[in-house]
Length: 472
Ligand code: HEM
Image 1 (cartoon, rainbow, N blue to C red):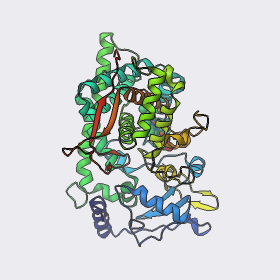
Image 2 (tube, rainbow, N blue to C red):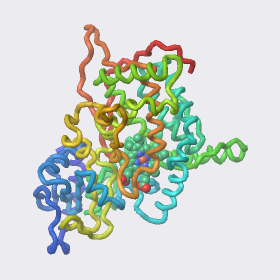
Image 3 (cartoon, helix red, strand yellow):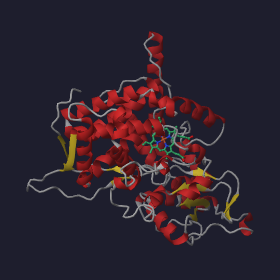
Image 4 (spheres, helix red, strand yellow):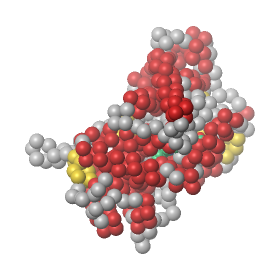
Protein backbone atom coordinates (compact mmCIF):
# COMPACT_ATOMS: atom_id res chain seq x y z
CA UNK A 1 0.00 0.00 0.00
CA UNK A 2 1.47 3.41 -0.97
CA UNK A 3 2.17 5.93 1.79
CA UNK A 4 -0.57 8.22 0.40
CA UNK A 5 -3.17 5.51 0.83
CA UNK A 6 -1.79 4.42 4.19
CA UNK A 7 -2.24 7.90 5.60
CA UNK A 8 -5.82 8.16 4.44
CA UNK A 9 -6.57 4.60 5.42
CA UNK A 10 -5.34 5.00 9.00
CA UNK A 11 -7.40 8.17 9.43
CA UNK A 12 -10.53 6.62 8.05
CA UNK A 13 -10.28 3.39 9.98
CA UNK A 14 -9.41 5.13 13.25
CA UNK A 15 -12.39 7.37 12.87
CA UNK A 16 -14.60 4.44 11.99
CA UNK A 17 -13.47 2.64 15.11
CA UNK A 18 -14.15 5.72 17.24
CA UNK A 19 -17.59 6.57 16.04
CA UNK A 20 -18.61 3.07 15.01
CA UNK A 21 -19.88 4.59 11.82
CA UNK A 22 -19.74 1.91 9.26
CA UNK A 23 -22.25 2.55 6.56
CA UNK A 24 -22.81 0.77 3.31
CA UNK A 25 -24.57 1.39 0.03
CA UNK A 26 -28.22 0.46 0.43
CA UNK A 27 -30.52 2.31 -1.97
CA UNK A 28 -33.26 1.84 -4.46
CA UNK A 29 -30.77 0.08 -6.73
CA UNK A 30 -32.50 -3.12 -5.74
CA UNK A 31 -34.55 -2.45 -8.83
CA UNK A 32 -31.79 -1.60 -11.34
CA UNK A 33 -28.27 -3.02 -11.53
CA UNK A 34 -25.25 -0.85 -10.87
CA UNK A 35 -22.73 -0.80 -13.72
CA UNK A 36 -20.33 -3.77 -13.63
CA UNK A 37 -17.10 -3.45 -11.69
CA UNK A 38 -14.52 -5.20 -9.52
CA UNK A 39 -15.68 -7.01 -6.40
CA UNK A 40 -15.29 -4.67 -3.41
CA UNK A 41 -13.77 -5.57 -0.06
CA UNK A 42 -16.06 -5.11 2.95
CA UNK A 43 -16.26 -1.49 4.14
CA UNK A 44 -13.18 -0.15 2.34
CA UNK A 45 -14.44 -1.05 -1.12
CA UNK A 46 -12.11 -1.09 -4.12
CA UNK A 47 -8.85 0.28 -2.73
CA UNK A 48 -6.95 -2.87 -3.64
CA UNK A 49 -4.85 -2.62 -6.78
CA UNK A 50 -5.19 1.16 -7.10
CA UNK A 51 -1.92 3.08 -7.07
CA UNK A 52 -2.95 6.46 -5.67
CA UNK A 53 -0.19 8.07 -7.76
CA UNK A 54 -1.57 6.74 -11.03
CA UNK A 55 -5.10 5.43 -10.37
CA UNK A 56 -5.97 5.73 -14.07
CA UNK A 57 -3.86 2.63 -14.81
CA UNK A 58 -6.06 0.39 -12.62
CA UNK A 59 -9.20 2.09 -13.98
CA UNK A 60 -8.02 1.40 -17.53
CA UNK A 61 -7.50 -2.30 -16.68
CA UNK A 62 -11.00 -2.38 -15.18
CA UNK A 63 -12.27 -0.83 -18.41
CA UNK A 64 -10.75 -3.69 -20.42
CA UNK A 65 -12.45 -6.19 -18.11
CA UNK A 66 -15.84 -4.57 -17.39
CA UNK A 67 -16.45 -2.15 -20.25
CA UNK A 68 -16.97 1.54 -20.88
CA UNK A 69 -18.71 2.27 -17.61
CA UNK A 70 -17.38 0.75 -14.39
CA UNK A 71 -18.76 0.95 -10.85
CA UNK A 72 -16.59 0.90 -7.73
CA UNK A 73 -16.79 2.33 -4.25
CA UNK A 74 -14.41 3.65 -1.62
CA UNK A 75 -15.76 3.49 1.92
CA UNK A 76 -19.26 3.48 0.46
CA UNK A 77 -18.74 6.53 -1.79
CA UNK A 78 -19.89 5.56 -5.27
CA UNK A 79 -17.29 6.08 -7.99
CA UNK A 80 -18.14 5.57 -11.62
CA UNK A 81 -15.31 5.47 -14.12
CA UNK A 82 -16.08 6.21 -17.74
CA UNK A 83 -13.66 4.77 -20.26
CA UNK A 84 -15.24 5.89 -23.49
CA UNK A 85 -15.55 9.33 -25.06
CA UNK A 86 -19.07 8.61 -26.29
CA UNK A 87 -20.39 7.74 -22.82
CA UNK A 88 -18.54 10.71 -21.28
CA UNK A 89 -20.13 13.17 -23.70
CA UNK A 90 -23.60 11.79 -22.97
CA UNK A 91 -23.32 11.55 -19.21
CA UNK A 92 -21.17 14.37 -17.90
CA UNK A 93 -22.76 17.64 -16.92
CA UNK A 94 -22.34 18.32 -13.22
CA UNK A 95 -19.49 18.69 -10.75
CA UNK A 96 -19.35 17.07 -7.26
CA UNK A 97 -18.74 19.09 -4.14
CA UNK A 98 -15.57 17.57 -2.74
CA UNK A 99 -14.88 18.48 0.91
CA UNK A 100 -11.12 18.60 0.25
CA UNK A 101 -11.59 21.57 -2.15
CA UNK A 102 -12.90 23.70 0.71
CA UNK A 103 -10.38 22.31 3.16
CA UNK A 104 -7.46 23.46 0.99
CA UNK A 105 -9.04 26.83 0.20
CA UNK A 106 -9.95 26.02 -3.42
CA UNK A 107 -13.71 26.51 -3.12
CA UNK A 108 -13.43 29.76 -5.16
CA UNK A 109 -12.03 27.85 -8.13
CA UNK A 110 -14.34 27.70 -11.15
CA UNK A 111 -12.98 24.36 -12.30
CA UNK A 112 -13.75 22.63 -9.01
CA UNK A 113 -16.89 24.57 -8.12
CA UNK A 114 -20.25 22.91 -7.86
CA UNK A 115 -22.92 23.91 -10.38
CA UNK A 116 -24.89 26.94 -9.09
CA UNK A 117 -25.27 30.74 -9.23
CA UNK A 118 -21.64 31.47 -8.32
CA UNK A 119 -20.33 29.03 -10.94
CA UNK A 120 -22.66 30.53 -13.59
CA UNK A 121 -21.39 34.04 -12.77
CA UNK A 122 -17.72 33.05 -12.93
CA UNK A 123 -18.17 30.89 -16.03
CA UNK A 124 -19.87 33.84 -17.80
CA UNK A 125 -16.90 36.12 -17.05
CA UNK A 126 -14.44 33.52 -18.32
CA UNK A 127 -16.56 32.90 -21.37
CA UNK A 128 -16.69 36.58 -22.28
CA UNK A 129 -12.93 36.90 -21.87
CA UNK A 130 -11.81 33.65 -23.49
CA UNK A 131 -14.42 32.58 -26.07
CA UNK A 132 -13.04 31.91 -29.55
CA UNK A 133 -13.40 35.46 -30.95
CA UNK A 134 -12.26 37.17 -27.74
CA UNK A 135 -9.18 34.94 -27.65
CA UNK A 136 -7.99 36.45 -30.93
CA UNK A 137 -7.40 39.72 -29.07
CA UNK A 138 -4.63 38.14 -26.97
CA UNK A 139 -2.54 37.05 -29.95
CA UNK A 140 -0.16 40.03 -30.09
CA UNK A 141 0.53 39.56 -26.37
CA UNK A 142 1.00 35.78 -26.80
CA UNK A 143 3.38 36.36 -29.71
CA UNK A 144 5.34 38.89 -27.64
CA UNK A 145 5.60 36.48 -24.70
CA UNK A 146 6.74 33.71 -27.08
CA UNK A 147 9.56 35.98 -28.31
CA UNK A 148 10.56 36.56 -24.70
CA UNK A 149 10.57 32.79 -24.19
CA UNK A 150 12.98 32.39 -27.14
CA UNK A 151 15.30 35.08 -25.74
CA UNK A 152 15.36 33.41 -22.32
CA UNK A 153 16.01 30.03 -23.93
CA UNK A 154 18.92 31.44 -25.94
CA UNK A 155 20.41 32.99 -22.80
CA UNK A 156 20.22 29.92 -20.58
CA UNK A 157 18.95 26.92 -22.56
CA UNK A 158 19.65 24.50 -19.68
CA UNK A 159 16.94 26.30 -17.67
CA UNK A 160 14.26 25.47 -20.22
CA UNK A 161 11.81 24.12 -17.62
CA UNK A 162 11.86 27.42 -15.79
CA UNK A 163 11.51 29.44 -19.00
CA UNK A 164 8.46 27.44 -20.01
CA UNK A 165 6.94 27.98 -16.59
CA UNK A 166 7.51 31.73 -16.83
CA UNK A 167 5.98 31.82 -20.34
CA UNK A 168 2.91 29.83 -19.26
CA UNK A 169 2.33 32.03 -16.25
CA UNK A 170 3.01 35.28 -18.01
CA UNK A 171 0.44 34.77 -20.79
CA UNK A 172 -2.31 34.03 -18.29
CA UNK A 173 -1.20 36.67 -15.78
CA UNK A 174 -1.14 39.24 -18.54
CA UNK A 175 -4.67 38.33 -19.72
CA UNK A 176 -6.01 38.11 -16.18
CA UNK A 177 -4.34 41.07 -14.47
CA UNK A 178 -2.26 42.85 -17.10
CA UNK A 179 0.56 41.72 -14.81
CA UNK A 180 4.01 41.54 -16.39
CA UNK A 181 5.63 38.41 -14.99
CA UNK A 182 9.33 38.62 -14.34
CA UNK A 183 12.01 35.99 -14.42
CA UNK A 184 12.07 34.37 -10.95
CA UNK A 185 8.82 36.14 -10.09
CA UNK A 186 7.92 35.32 -6.46
CA UNK A 187 4.21 35.34 -7.29
CA UNK A 188 4.68 32.73 -10.02
CA UNK A 189 6.77 30.61 -7.65
CA UNK A 190 4.08 30.88 -4.97
CA UNK A 191 1.29 29.88 -7.35
CA UNK A 192 3.41 26.97 -8.61
CA UNK A 193 4.08 25.61 -5.11
CA UNK A 194 0.49 26.07 -4.06
CA UNK A 195 -0.88 24.28 -7.12
CA UNK A 196 1.61 21.47 -6.78
CA UNK A 197 0.25 20.75 -3.32
CA UNK A 198 -3.33 21.09 -4.55
CA UNK A 199 -2.98 18.66 -7.45
CA UNK A 200 -1.57 16.08 -5.08
CA UNK A 201 -4.21 16.47 -2.39
CA UNK A 202 -7.37 17.17 -4.39
CA UNK A 203 -7.74 13.64 -5.69
CA UNK A 204 -11.34 12.42 -5.74
CA UNK A 205 -10.18 9.14 -4.19
CA UNK A 206 -9.03 11.10 -1.11
CA UNK A 207 -12.21 13.20 -1.04
CA UNK A 208 -14.26 9.98 -1.17
CA UNK A 209 -12.97 9.02 2.26
CA UNK A 210 -14.06 12.37 3.73
CA UNK A 211 -17.46 12.11 2.06
CA UNK A 212 -17.92 8.67 3.63
CA UNK A 213 -16.66 9.88 7.05
CA UNK A 214 -17.40 13.63 7.31
CA UNK A 215 -16.51 13.58 11.00
CA UNK A 216 -12.86 13.03 9.97
CA UNK A 217 -12.82 16.70 8.98
CA UNK A 218 -13.36 17.68 12.61
CA UNK A 219 -10.30 15.76 13.84
CA UNK A 220 -7.26 17.86 14.78
CA UNK A 221 -4.17 18.03 12.54
CA UNK A 222 -2.11 15.95 15.04
CA UNK A 223 -4.54 13.02 14.82
CA UNK A 224 -3.05 9.92 13.10
CA UNK A 225 -3.63 10.08 9.36
CA UNK A 226 -4.67 13.74 9.42
CA UNK A 227 -1.55 15.28 7.87
CA UNK A 228 -3.80 16.71 5.18
CA UNK A 229 -5.11 19.18 7.76
CA UNK A 230 -1.61 20.57 8.34
CA UNK A 231 -1.18 20.93 4.60
CA UNK A 232 -4.59 22.59 4.38
CA UNK A 233 -3.58 25.37 6.78
CA UNK A 234 -0.53 26.13 4.62
CA UNK A 235 -2.53 25.83 1.40
CA UNK A 236 -5.22 28.31 2.53
CA UNK A 237 -2.53 30.82 3.46
CA UNK A 238 -0.83 30.48 0.05
CA UNK A 239 -4.13 30.79 -1.79
CA UNK A 240 -5.01 33.94 0.18
CA UNK A 241 -1.67 35.50 -0.78
CA UNK A 242 -1.86 34.79 -4.49
CA UNK A 243 -5.48 35.84 -4.66
CA UNK A 244 -4.85 39.16 -2.87
CA UNK A 245 -1.51 40.31 -4.29
CA UNK A 246 -2.43 40.53 -7.99
CA UNK A 247 -5.79 42.05 -7.08
CA UNK A 248 -4.08 44.78 -5.11
CA UNK A 249 -1.72 45.25 -8.07
CA UNK A 250 -4.65 45.95 -10.43
CA UNK A 251 -6.29 48.31 -7.91
CA UNK A 252 -3.04 50.24 -7.63
CA UNK A 253 -2.68 50.52 -11.41
CA UNK A 254 -6.30 51.63 -11.69
CA UNK A 255 -5.67 54.33 -9.10
CA UNK A 256 -2.60 55.45 -11.09
CA UNK A 257 -4.61 55.35 -14.32
CA UNK A 258 -2.17 52.87 -15.91
CA UNK A 259 -4.31 49.70 -15.87
CA UNK A 260 -4.78 48.06 -19.30
CA UNK A 261 -7.77 45.92 -20.20
CA UNK A 262 -7.76 42.63 -18.30
CA UNK A 263 -10.38 40.46 -16.63
CA UNK A 264 -9.12 40.39 -13.02
CA UNK A 265 -9.81 36.71 -12.78
CA UNK A 266 -8.12 34.00 -10.80
CA UNK A 267 -5.12 32.89 -12.86
CA UNK A 268 -4.87 29.73 -10.99
CA UNK A 269 -7.85 27.92 -12.12
CA UNK A 270 -4.68 25.95 -12.83
CA UNK A 271 -4.42 27.44 -16.28
CA UNK A 272 -0.73 28.33 -16.23
CA UNK A 273 0.13 24.97 -14.76
CA UNK A 274 -1.71 23.20 -17.58
CA UNK A 275 -0.04 25.13 -20.40
CA UNK A 276 3.29 24.51 -18.69
CA UNK A 277 2.69 20.75 -18.40
CA UNK A 278 1.66 20.44 -22.06
CA UNK A 279 4.86 22.21 -23.19
CA UNK A 280 7.05 20.05 -20.97
CA UNK A 281 5.44 16.91 -22.40
CA UNK A 282 6.00 18.30 -25.91
CA UNK A 283 9.75 18.76 -25.26
CA UNK A 284 9.98 15.26 -23.80
CA UNK A 285 8.31 13.89 -26.94
CA UNK A 286 10.74 15.81 -29.18
CA UNK A 287 13.67 14.28 -27.28
CA UNK A 288 12.26 10.75 -27.51
CA UNK A 289 11.01 10.95 -31.10
CA UNK A 290 13.67 12.87 -33.08
CA UNK A 291 12.19 11.93 -36.44
CA UNK A 292 9.08 13.97 -35.62
CA UNK A 293 11.20 16.96 -34.69
CA UNK A 294 13.25 16.71 -37.90
CA UNK A 295 10.09 16.73 -39.97
CA UNK A 296 8.82 19.80 -38.11
CA UNK A 297 12.16 21.59 -38.59
CA UNK A 298 12.11 20.93 -42.32
CA UNK A 299 8.52 22.18 -42.64
CA UNK A 300 9.13 25.38 -40.67
CA UNK A 301 12.29 26.13 -42.64
CA UNK A 302 10.41 25.65 -45.92
CA UNK A 303 7.34 27.72 -44.95
CA UNK A 304 8.74 30.38 -42.62
CA UNK A 305 12.39 30.51 -43.62
CA UNK A 306 15.22 31.06 -41.17
CA UNK A 307 15.05 34.78 -40.53
CA UNK A 308 11.87 35.09 -38.47
CA UNK A 309 9.70 33.22 -35.99
CA UNK A 310 6.41 31.56 -37.04
CA UNK A 311 3.34 33.73 -36.49
CA UNK A 312 -0.35 32.89 -36.26
CA UNK A 313 -0.67 33.86 -39.95
CA UNK A 314 1.56 30.86 -40.79
CA UNK A 315 -0.60 28.41 -38.86
CA UNK A 316 -2.68 27.12 -41.77
CA UNK A 317 0.53 26.33 -43.70
CA UNK A 318 2.04 24.49 -40.73
CA UNK A 319 -0.55 21.77 -40.18
CA UNK A 320 2.05 19.26 -39.04
CA UNK A 321 2.73 21.51 -36.01
CA UNK A 322 -0.96 21.34 -35.14
CA UNK A 323 -0.77 17.57 -35.51
CA UNK A 324 2.15 17.58 -33.02
CA UNK A 325 0.06 19.69 -30.63
CA UNK A 326 -2.87 17.26 -30.82
CA UNK A 327 -0.59 14.26 -30.41
CA UNK A 328 0.97 15.89 -27.33
CA UNK A 329 -2.48 16.21 -25.75
CA UNK A 330 -3.25 12.58 -26.62
CA UNK A 331 0.10 10.87 -26.00
CA UNK A 332 0.21 11.80 -22.33
CA UNK A 333 -2.92 13.67 -21.17
CA UNK A 334 -2.07 16.16 -18.42
CA UNK A 335 -5.36 15.38 -16.66
CA UNK A 336 -5.55 11.58 -17.05
CA UNK A 337 -8.83 11.46 -15.12
CA UNK A 338 -9.92 14.90 -16.34
CA UNK A 339 -11.84 16.75 -13.62
CA UNK A 340 -14.47 14.71 -11.75
CA UNK A 341 -18.13 15.27 -12.41
CA UNK A 342 -21.09 14.23 -10.27
CA UNK A 343 -24.55 12.76 -10.52
CA UNK A 344 -26.73 15.30 -8.75
CA UNK A 345 -29.76 12.99 -8.82
CA UNK A 346 -29.98 9.27 -9.23
CA UNK A 347 -30.13 8.46 -12.91
CA UNK A 348 -30.32 5.61 -15.36
CA UNK A 349 -27.89 5.06 -18.20
CA UNK A 350 -28.17 2.22 -20.71
CA UNK A 351 -30.03 0.09 -18.17
CA UNK A 352 -27.65 0.83 -15.29
CA UNK A 353 -28.44 2.66 -12.08
CA UNK A 354 -26.25 5.73 -11.45
CA UNK A 355 -26.64 6.55 -7.74
CA UNK A 356 -27.21 10.10 -6.57
CA UNK A 357 -23.96 11.76 -5.45
CA UNK A 358 -21.71 9.36 -7.38
CA UNK A 359 -18.33 10.79 -8.34
CA UNK A 360 -18.01 10.31 -12.08
CA UNK A 361 -14.49 10.14 -13.44
CA UNK A 362 -13.84 10.41 -17.16
CA UNK A 363 -10.86 8.16 -17.75
CA UNK A 364 -9.16 10.26 -20.44
CA UNK A 365 -6.11 8.02 -20.11
CA UNK A 366 -8.13 4.99 -21.30
CA UNK A 367 -9.70 7.05 -24.10
CA UNK A 368 -6.36 8.36 -25.34
CA UNK A 369 -4.70 4.94 -25.20
CA UNK A 370 -7.58 3.17 -26.97
CA UNK A 371 -5.75 0.91 -29.41
CA UNK A 372 -8.66 0.71 -31.80
CA UNK A 373 -8.77 4.45 -32.27
CA UNK A 374 -5.04 5.10 -31.80
CA UNK A 375 -3.03 2.02 -32.84
CA UNK A 376 0.29 1.63 -31.01
CA UNK A 377 -0.75 4.36 -28.53
CA UNK A 378 2.61 4.74 -26.76
CA UNK A 379 4.18 5.85 -30.07
CA UNK A 380 4.25 9.64 -30.56
CA UNK A 381 2.82 9.87 -34.05
CA UNK A 382 1.38 13.22 -35.23
CA UNK A 383 0.42 11.49 -38.50
CA UNK A 384 -2.65 10.10 -36.67
CA UNK A 385 -4.17 13.55 -37.06
CA UNK A 386 -3.47 13.98 -40.77
CA UNK A 387 -5.46 12.82 -43.77
CA UNK A 388 -3.72 11.21 -46.73
CA UNK A 389 -3.49 14.66 -48.36
CA UNK A 390 -1.50 16.01 -45.38
CA UNK A 391 -4.36 18.13 -44.06
CA UNK A 392 -5.60 17.85 -40.48
CA UNK A 393 -8.43 15.39 -39.85
CA UNK A 394 -11.50 16.01 -37.66
CA UNK A 395 -10.05 14.58 -34.43
CA UNK A 396 -9.31 17.65 -32.32
CA UNK A 397 -8.67 15.62 -29.13
CA UNK A 398 -11.53 17.39 -27.39
CA UNK A 399 -11.39 14.90 -24.52
CA UNK A 400 -8.28 16.73 -23.24
CA UNK A 401 -10.47 19.76 -22.50
CA UNK A 402 -13.31 17.95 -20.76
CA UNK A 403 -16.95 17.25 -21.39
CA UNK A 404 -20.45 18.69 -21.22
CA UNK A 405 -21.27 22.17 -20.06
CA UNK A 406 -18.17 22.21 -17.86
CA UNK A 407 -15.81 21.90 -20.85
CA UNK A 408 -12.64 24.03 -20.48
CA UNK A 409 -13.57 27.63 -21.08
CA UNK A 410 -9.95 28.65 -21.74
CA UNK A 411 -9.30 26.11 -24.49
CA UNK A 412 -9.02 28.62 -27.38
CA UNK A 413 -6.62 30.78 -25.42
CA UNK A 414 -4.63 27.72 -24.27
CA UNK A 415 -4.46 26.32 -27.78
CA UNK A 416 -2.98 29.59 -29.11
CA UNK A 417 -0.46 29.88 -26.25
CA UNK A 418 0.74 26.32 -26.75
CA UNK A 419 0.89 26.61 -30.55
CA UNK A 420 2.90 29.84 -30.64
CA UNK A 421 5.37 28.48 -28.09
CA UNK A 422 5.73 25.10 -29.81
CA UNK A 423 6.24 26.52 -33.28
CA UNK A 424 8.81 29.06 -32.01
CA UNK A 425 10.72 26.42 -30.03
CA UNK A 426 10.82 24.15 -33.07
CA UNK A 427 12.02 27.00 -35.29
CA UNK A 428 14.81 27.97 -32.90
CA UNK A 429 16.02 24.83 -31.13
CA UNK A 430 16.81 21.15 -31.35
CA UNK A 431 15.91 19.13 -28.26
CA UNK A 432 17.82 15.90 -27.86
CA UNK A 433 19.15 13.37 -25.38
CA UNK A 434 22.07 14.72 -23.39
CA UNK A 435 25.47 13.25 -24.21
CA UNK A 436 27.21 11.63 -21.25
CA UNK A 437 30.92 11.66 -20.31
CA UNK A 438 31.39 8.49 -22.40
CA UNK A 439 30.23 10.33 -25.50
CA UNK A 440 27.00 8.30 -25.67
CA UNK A 441 23.44 9.66 -25.43
CA UNK A 442 22.02 9.26 -21.92
CA UNK A 443 19.09 6.86 -22.13
CA UNK A 444 16.25 7.36 -19.63
CA UNK A 445 12.77 6.18 -18.78
CA UNK A 446 10.45 9.20 -18.29
CA UNK A 447 9.21 9.65 -14.71
CA UNK A 448 6.03 11.54 -13.92
CA UNK A 449 4.81 13.83 -11.19
CA UNK A 450 1.25 12.85 -10.45
CA UNK A 451 -1.82 14.00 -8.67
CA UNK A 452 -4.97 15.13 -10.44
CA UNK A 453 -2.60 16.64 -13.01
CA UNK A 454 0.65 15.19 -14.25
CA UNK A 455 3.85 16.38 -15.89
CA UNK A 456 7.29 14.85 -16.53
CA UNK A 457 9.88 14.98 -13.77
CA UNK A 458 13.20 16.54 -14.87
CA UNK A 459 14.87 14.52 -17.64
CA UNK A 460 18.33 14.86 -19.21
CA UNK A 461 17.92 17.03 -22.27
CA UNK A 462 20.19 19.12 -24.40
CA UNK A 463 18.76 22.28 -26.00
CA UNK A 464 20.79 23.41 -28.98
CA UNK A 465 20.02 26.63 -30.88
CA UNK A 466 19.57 26.08 -34.61
CA UNK A 467 21.43 28.35 -37.00
CA UNK A 468 19.21 31.34 -37.68
CA UNK A 469 19.41 35.05 -38.17
CA UNK A 470 16.17 35.76 -36.35
CA UNK A 471 15.73 39.29 -35.12
CA UNK A 472 13.82 38.75 -31.87
C1 HEM B 1 -3.64 23.06 -22.42
C2 HEM B 1 -4.19 23.69 -21.42
C3 HEM B 1 -5.50 23.31 -20.76
C4 HEM B 1 -6.10 22.09 -20.63
C5 HEM B 1 -5.61 20.72 -21.14
C6 HEM B 1 -7.34 22.30 -19.90
C7 HEM B 1 -8.23 21.30 -19.54
C8 HEM B 1 -9.36 21.52 -18.79
C9 HEM B 1 -10.26 20.47 -18.34
C10 HEM B 1 -10.09 18.98 -18.63
C11 HEM B 1 -11.25 21.06 -17.64
C12 HEM B 1 -12.43 20.34 -16.97
C13 HEM B 1 -13.55 20.17 -17.98
C14 HEM B 1 -14.65 19.27 -17.48
O1 HEM B 1 -15.09 19.40 -16.36
O2 HEM B 1 -15.12 18.38 -18.22
C15 HEM B 1 -11.00 22.48 -17.64
C16 HEM B 1 -11.83 23.41 -17.05
C17 HEM B 1 -11.57 24.76 -17.03
N1 HEM B 1 -10.52 25.41 -17.64
FE1 HEM B 1 -9.03 24.56 -18.70
N2 HEM B 1 -7.45 23.64 -19.63
C18 HEM B 1 -6.35 24.29 -20.13
C19 HEM B 1 -6.08 25.64 -20.07
C20 HEM B 1 -6.92 26.60 -19.55
C21 HEM B 1 -6.69 28.04 -19.61
C22 HEM B 1 -5.49 28.71 -20.26
C23 HEM B 1 -7.74 28.62 -18.94
C24 HEM B 1 -8.02 30.09 -18.70
C25 HEM B 1 -7.76 31.03 -19.56
C26 HEM B 1 -8.62 27.57 -18.48
C27 HEM B 1 -9.78 27.77 -17.77
C28 HEM B 1 -10.62 26.76 -17.35
C29 HEM B 1 -11.80 26.99 -16.54
C30 HEM B 1 -12.30 28.33 -16.00
C31 HEM B 1 -12.41 25.74 -16.35
C32 HEM B 1 -13.66 25.44 -15.52
C33 HEM B 1 -14.86 25.36 -16.42
C34 HEM B 1 -16.10 25.00 -15.62
O3 HEM B 1 -16.01 24.19 -14.72
O4 HEM B 1 -17.16 25.55 -15.95
N3 HEM B 1 -8.10 26.36 -18.87
N4 HEM B 1 -9.84 22.74 -18.33
